[in-house]
Amino acid sequence: MKYVTIINNERYEIEIDNDGSVLVNGELRDVDFLNLGGSLFSLITENKSFEAVIDDDEGRIAVMMRGRLFEAQVLDERAILLIQRRGAQPSGSGEVQAPMPGLVVAVTATVGQKVQQGDTVVILESMKMQNELKSPVDGVVASIHVEAGQAVDKNDLLVEIKAAASETST
Image (tube, rainbow, N blue to C red; front, side):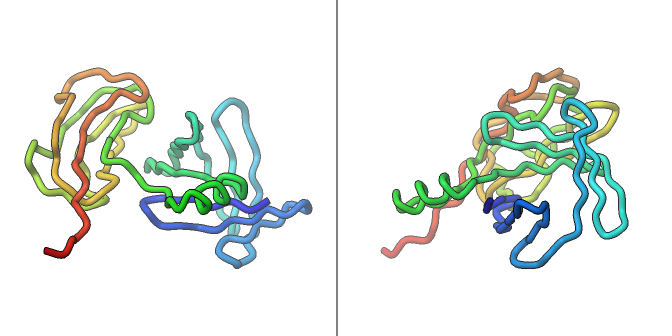
């Protein structure tokens, strides 16, 4: 089965064959992946072992690994076909949501501030680890819905970023 995974607007083509082999962007990868129960997984690749917490919430996938939080969008062959037929491309919104329940440690952005994709806008403590939540797009911070010390639930809207408009001719 073929998948397209989008992480930080970078696209990875992943193909998993019936024999368990994995190709990432056409390159064969040696991967051993095991569910340890619930959302906890073990991953062994290139003789390195990792534990990851993976949470799939209606197509938005949050992966916590080695103290870092990654958000991904995964599309299978059918979803890709539908998107291509509509003429659309998957894109990230300017919303930064809590990937899990936690406590806001700091809000590093201010309303009106210009941010680049990947800039930290909120630091969230969850499961005794601090996670830097980053802007998914280039743009301007439109609104902030939380403050330091505030408890949040999974999927709570933390920050809204108005994406930078693409250049238009005048």
